[in-house]
Length: 341
Image (tube, rainbow, N blue to C red; front, side, top):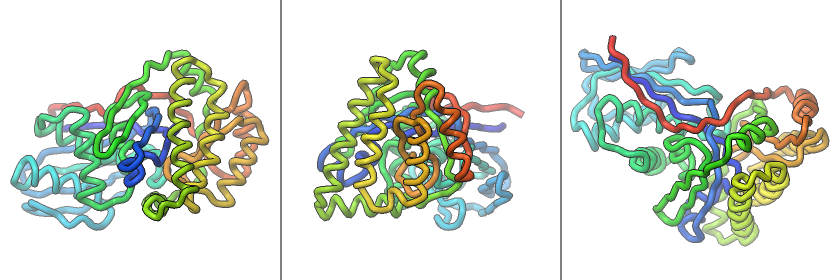
């Protein structure tokens, strides 16, 4: 028997960072995101040798444990181990015997929610295998708890819910409560946005936790500039929802540019000279706006390129040595299935 799962990565179109505590606890957050056809994959193969084996075939990495009710959460497989420990502690109450392998379509630290999406994918495979009675909200919440509470990794709440639900979603964050509002964006609006939104990998990665910790500290220290910027990003999410539903797609570049200017005020490490140079060149080549994906500091950026300007923007960005990714929007979230040998 082979159990598989996949969960989609997301583009955070507006409101990014307002899902992070303590801002979301005090003021409430709002985010608009959309998933794309780039995925985190997991495979579980049950065994009868009383061993649990974690594998990353694309990196030729493997760790093995015998009769493990709990494994140390260190090394490369920290996310896999965090999920395993929670599954055993909360559901099975005994060691599992299996091989579990995973990989992601984009590099780690790329700003598309890779870590959280991988946790959702891993968790989904266990839900499929063990027939756990968990719905979408349950899976997303549990993934959040594993990553943020059990493992103590800094970050927000949007990625786990985006990966689980999929599609275009307007999400609201009030204290511990998360409300996912699926948006009925017409297919032609989705296609036009995909045509005009250029996804560019800067060929650098970032440690989002460091940026997020700075952002959190700015809120704790009541730095008015940072807090006001987060308020503006909430406004951005509401504006983005309106233009997507109405089909005013060419306004998106302006809204992205508005958000990017305020996002850079949230923490000093959101941007850097290279990212600023990439953004300026893209604008000069025809993009009407854009942003970095995720917390900032590196990874993916995307730019709204009206008309046929995506070609001139892509050519202008080639001087930086990054990569333009092809993608389509993905309307489905977490998927799991079982194959019999």
